[in-house]
Amino acid sequence: MIKALVVFVLMYIGMLAFSKWRVYFAVAGAAFMIILGVLPVTSAPAAINWNVIMMIAGTMGLVTLFIESGMPARLADLMLKKVPNVCWAIIALSVFSGVVSAFVDNVATVLMVAPVGLAICKKLKINPIPVIISIAVSSNLQGAATLVGDTTSILLGGYAGMSFIDFIWWLGRPSIFWAVELGAAGTVVILYFIFKKEKAPVESERLTPVTDYIPGIMLSLVVLFLIIASFFEIPVIDDYKNGLICMAMFLIELCRNCIKNKSASPLKLVAKEMDYQTIAMLCGLFIVIASITEAGIIDAIATWFAGIGGGNVFLLYTIIVFGSVIISAFVDNIPYVAAMLPVVQSLAAQIGINPIVLYFGLLTGATLGGNLTPFGASANVTGIGILRKEGYTVKNSDFFKIGLPFTMTAVIIGYAFTWIVWSGLK
Image 1 (cartoon, rainbow, N blue to C red):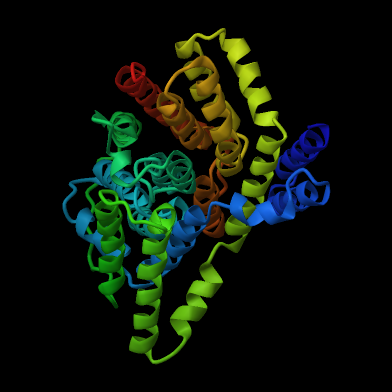
Image 2: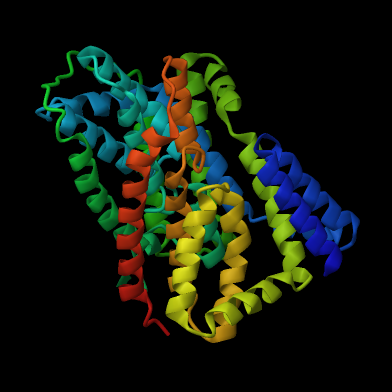
């Protein structure tokens, strides 16, 4: 146990202290677990959740082609034609960003929507900083709403065996989708009070041309097929069906795109935009987590948590939610959620409760906590990077003015909803 604990702690310290090199620390941690004999080398491939890896890779590839088609920007332009002024344009862009990010990676969503926000700000000569921040935090919020919305959701889905439909309705109860959407509704009120003085009229003079409608259709079909597949058990491949769906739809669209363009340019584009570091980091983390589970560390941590809570489920739930908010404000939520899922499962088993309420509490706190700070979520970092390229410097006070009330509103609503709906589950 000591060897595994030392490797795990050193890996996590390295990932915290050197965020740019976190993938190398994750892979090195996995390698040391195998070298030291904590996990047999023959068990390493089985420790990786290949369903999650395929879902992430397939969704990333399809989203790249979707963005390239121009459809997301076109949808934003059409939406802007329906709003009366800047205040509602900002709110509409933020809501649109949230809706898109429920099905598309948060960073990709910011890259799609932020240019539209910048164009509006330049036209009306208003400060783009609060606009881009609103778009970023909204995209980060909605990532937890569906199975494919964010890496953390995919991790939970894979770990808890949740289907796409389970994120909406599970075991006869409204699932985490509704907790997120109620939180999102609350944040609309926050955004209105922040921007209510922005009354200048706005309109979209031209519509972004769409070069190809098929990637958008394929992305919609992925969601549809994930929903349909959730109603069926498929022998042999059932544990991999969601990942196979995402990969199959991506490869079909990639081949079609290459044939249409009569070149390999779509393949080169996807190869360039694929986030290999996140995929490699997750593979390393899966091996490390399997190792510390094998060594008994997960059960020991769960016992410690149970001791803090004294067996009081509400207290444990509260600690997990708000502890995750604080930790995720400073720590990347992907490795945090990956490490905490088995802890939560073991904790629930020790105190004799269904783990779902704790799972949802973990996902709510870890996903939304990133909005507390400018560097707590990749979407926020991306938005600030876009502003930096435009010559704007984002102060911490600029971010906290929006991020703090936005985050706490969404967290408190989701926290209350999840406890009311799921705390009584046996």
